[in-house]
Length: 111
Image 1 (cartoon, rainbow, N blue to C red):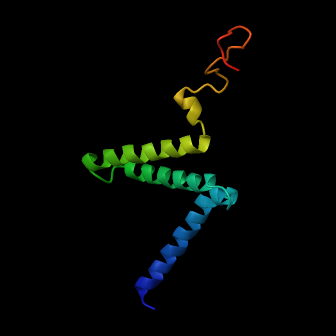
Image 2 (cartoon, rainbow, N blue to C red; image 1 turned 90 degrees about the vertical axis):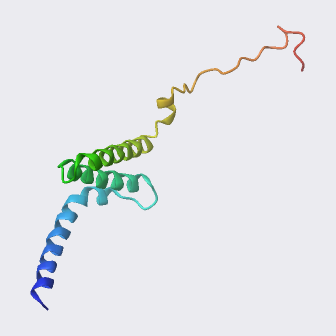
Image 3 (cartoon, rainbow, N blue to C red; image 1 turned 45 degrees about the horizontal axis):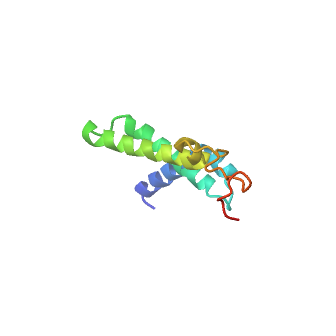
């Protein structure tokens, strides 16, 4: 085994332990039967990526659109997980859409 592979092994173990610690709370809550946790993992990963991109390792022309796209994805994941589509659209659940007219009040109303 050469020196390069030994260094890779060291950094792989170091990064693996760091990832285990970082992702442990999310993996602990994960359940196989619900897609909610998959979205939570994606959101967590996108938030980490956004922090790294915001540090400015790219020029602004390419970095800023990426930041906006990633933030939009995070917002969409939040909307899916909160399941509040109707409230955000202004839908009122108990609103009466139409009113029926009783037969005795309106003789032309058919039976």
